[in-house]
Length: 340
Image 1 (cartoon, helix red, strand yellow):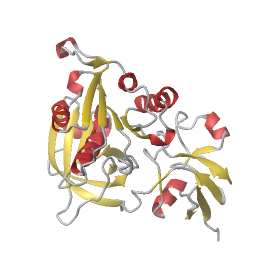
Image 2: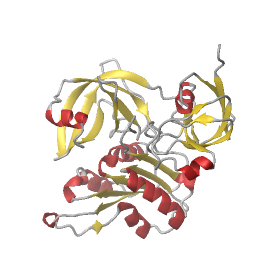
Image 3: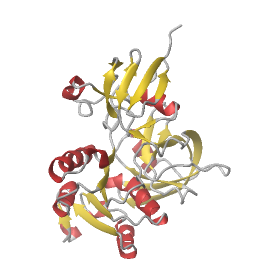
Image 4: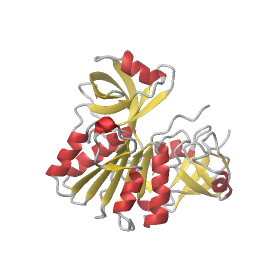
């Protein structure tokens, strides 16, 4: 009988075993140790860490998330990597989410409301006896009948958990098309969650820079509303990037936050405003707008969510040009699934 492989996490020295066919991340989560992760399909790079001793099967992943140069230096994506024997790995562990139980539950579609031409607010109601415990910024996976999954961040804060709010964009794929053309209120969906390590680190006093593109606003909304609810006094500044004015689909809400909370500031940025928008605000790339305003980020914390190119550019440029410490950048890139 084959003995299970053992993984030692550095620098914590936590030890756990990995079952046959299981990834390092899945085994860690099963044992209650939360490694930073995002997409869980080898596309975003959030779970990247170093293999200090032993060997792994790297699994299937996107080259942009694990370039060959990183591999040669000993890095792997732990959402895909499987140990070939006992291994010692170095990675960023997260403390606050380990006590949150990941569950599979049914939910009823309670409300559907178009927030923009291609964005639908979907509210999910859990069974009467159930509540989902989660951290602001985490996501759920909708489980489809064909065995595939679609990940959606929860746009509501944990204190406001009567329903789960999702912001669904119509990308034109099978599930998006179903949501916008066939799905109706009272339909039943199954989901797994909460998932992800994108949530506000509440210890410390560092100013917080929030960076969102498109529906990356959803988890940022949850984080901001949680910060208000728990009376976090740290300065919060939100840069929300979109193509046109209509893509800032909850602009009035964010403007109201800025009016009502002295520690919150809002900077909307459009990359391609239309003449009809009559836009006099900021234009260009959203992360570059933040860099123009905050040249020194060495004492800040950044939370970035949205399209991968925005998240990757922000992580690279904030560190290289603004002095942001690598450990103070937290992200959730909305990545497509890795092709099988």
